[in-house]
Image 1 (cartoon, rainbow, N blue to C red):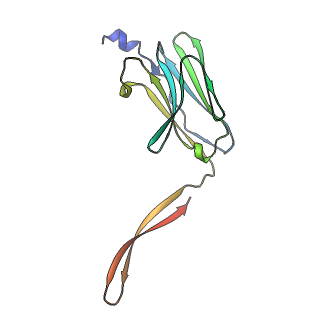
Image 2 (spheres, rainbow, N blue to C red):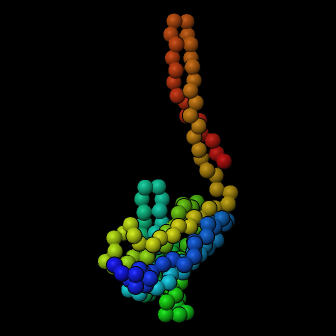
Image 3 (tube, one colour):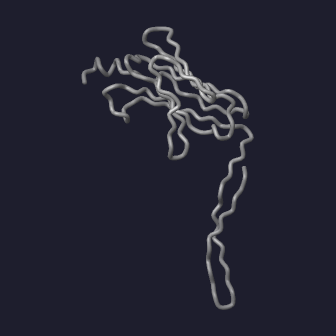
Length: 151
């Protein structure tokens, strides 16, 4: 690949913001892409070990009850894709990813940017592992105990 091909590759021009908000509000992520060419912009929700495709855009927006995606272009080489997550709740908390899908380029090389949604007042359950020693007259035993806490 020559340097002209590298210079014209799409890029994400700004970082996605991490957003802390109250439950029930709408949240918007803006992904600014330069040199888009024939690439596509995808949005993903990443939760634990699974990734859920929110939308693959081919130059048009998508919309359904939970998510709305739209694009705007103010010049020929800058496109802004906006993901709106409607009425967020604890199950919407997590990582959202903007990915530029470039034809003829393998996935690991696709530009991507992550942003997080955090819900104010959402209790996070964590676990604490304790080692407990128990001694009886003749026997001694050690076991593990899980304690749950809410933060």
